[in-house]
Length: 397
Image (cartoon, rainbow, N blue to C red; front, side, top):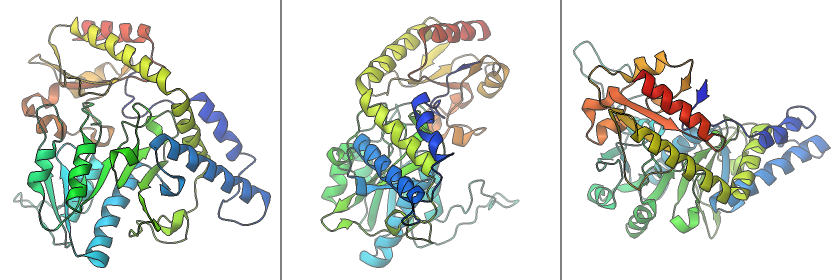
């Protein structure tokens, strides 16, 4: 099987695995324990990794909070900021996001908006009515343009007097569209609104500088840049007094500056740190490799009848290609299952498996939701594998 589902997860880098192993074997200490060497070594490893991840993001080490992944980071930031601002600052309770976000953002905002309580929400009754509750917050979901870009104008039009936070994804996880989050951040600053961006698909693939971009908050995961699963970070911008107050997502111990309780997964944190270090070290080489592979993939797809690109513009991150199979009898779920012994590709986000893509609907392609395939490459992908992919698609489609 050839792997082309790197937007779901990337393979772990060999250097990352080697860095992690000692912290699964010999150096198994709890970094919150005191004095003895295993605890000190674990704590030092965590802080070294914090420095590496901060360097990758253009942040300060004290602005990096380790979490279980980008989904937790996004939940923590949106819920935590909205709670703190509403009850401890000025009472503002309105959040703005887009209809083309990752599920972590969409469902968090729907939760605050009283639309659901779980991820497979069962509040619809036999008559099709959906129960909505008042949690004291309001959410607006702005539309995107035809390529899935979140525009400054759309955000501006949604701003209300009680708007506290805007959350906008940098690189769309399904179609690779890049939005100008720097300009959105500038708009938010002008209006006294905090800004969060999901950087998960961007980090390690394009240069990111959270300070230069003007972000207040950001989320990302290690497993999209050749690190382990189950580890991510929340970037929280410092002010002149240090870490700005935010309501904890998990209460308990005082780990991670008191905002994220729980014993740290040292081996995963070390893996994230090593993956970040490699990403910074090999940035130019990897950027060139991904651009070359992307070009090879686009050219190959162009040779197949019935295929068109969802986003054919330059506002797309190389390596994430979403296509439409323009054949009447084509069904993406059945096709992916049919070729699963040969290819690993997807119909969209792994967090929305089995559901029609909301992103595709949002860009006006609702009639094509069952005809979309997402192909994503990594730095280990070869041109020979792309040639095999193209041939399989030709043969099967």
